[in-house]
Length: 303
Image (cartoon, rainbow, N blue to C red; front, side, top):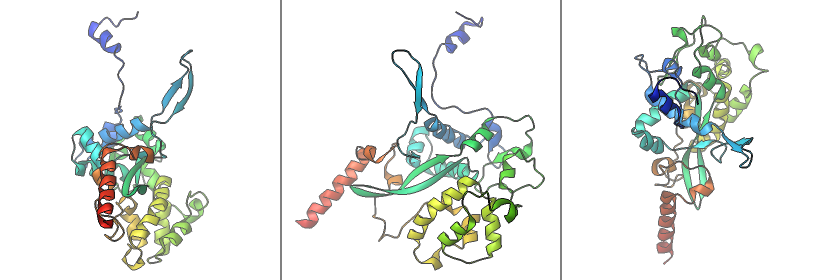
């Protein structure tokens, strides 16, 4: 048996610790505008990363690794603001603001879905993660400068044309010509322009903004737009396209009118525990209580 020569270190080394990991590099990358580490964002990101880390499958007889599997059943991780708040002793507002900051830099994204489990559950929060950006912010580069630091505020840092092309900020450089990007965009601008269906503003300027977005942001927008349009069916009340893009409105929660969204059925407000698919939803105590209340109300209505 090997030893370090220090009894305490040897004993700690024998403890099989599992759980969330916060890489040292995050303390350099994830900072508040005042320069202090953004601990809330790092804690929440570490939890999200934990769920996205696959588990290994082993043969129980030989112990050999036979495969890997994800920890959750849906296509994305489903959590609520309340579940993070309860787990880490934060307020719901602190959680939302931390996730806002993480989304602003593209390391994660979120979308709100409507699920039907005997009742309609609106605004069920799902969180995705960007593996490339996660890798970029998790390792310290020898050439790291102050300009590399991600200042996680509600507004993304401005683009610096003189920045090192290897930094994260270079990925959001808006000085990109149509000729260089149109063929490589994962979602063509015209797809967004036609789907948004409010052709107002300087189209060329809006297209340049679209080209400056990350692939994950364009994908998140195309998923968000159908629900956004449903919540604002009259296009004159929708934001202008350039405002929608500049404000990163695809990260906003979808809020329907009272006539479209049943009161008291906002899953993000009521269900605190993490749930991973519709089958699990049916066993959640709060969901069951909501279903029972609905059925009870229905029986009174028919009496």
